[in-house]
Length: 93
Length: 172
Image 1 (cartoon, rainbow over the protein chains, first blue to last red):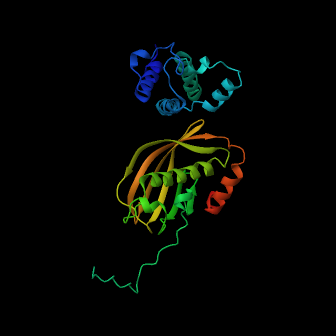
Image 2 (image 1 turned 30 degrees about the horizontal axis):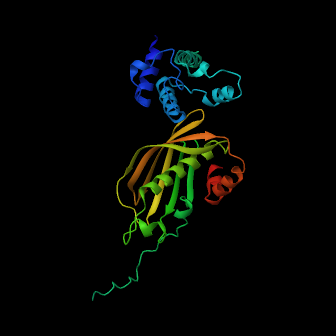
Image 3 (image 1 turned 60 degrees about the vertical axis):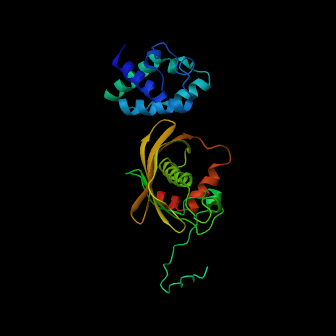
């Protein structure tokens, strides 16, 4: 996987105290890894800092709560990584 | 027994009046400044002479509990976030990291509270806050807040609280 995934997986492992080998691209952050909302904000903070971006968590939460987007789109790690890459690309464009 | 009380000095220090009400969680007496560019707030509070808190913490030896110093730093941080976000969101404390209490704080201590916004995320904010007494840092912490739209009925009350302590005037 990409270096983005490696960075995100390491952040999740350190922040949420989850063994690194459990963190795979197909893992769902909440359903599979058991990350709660507080831990997810810790992770978001670390991701924001590591990539110098601002994950649009409020927008994502609203979209999921309104049923517009399935939670998997944001919380399955390979999808999260793709969105981080897109945010980084948009920032550098 | 037999010891005489020390005579009251004619030159006794005059203390600033305290408006802190510890038992009501009103921890900030007044906001001194809100720097929108530097994303920094300065506030002042004076620890009250008496409070039921001191009856237990500790009997015969009143000290500000560390948890209330943390709350004081959190409230200064919260008012910073409120001011910078122009009251669009309410911050709720969700994490306290690296809290350090470096010396004792007793009644009448004049607290100089500062908080700086370290990061404004989407739906959360991170601050670093500290309190100094007489120029000496007595505690500091890194604090994290969830920011969300005001629950019903809360916005007006928070704005009134902010007006009372001078935040609205400082925010301009």
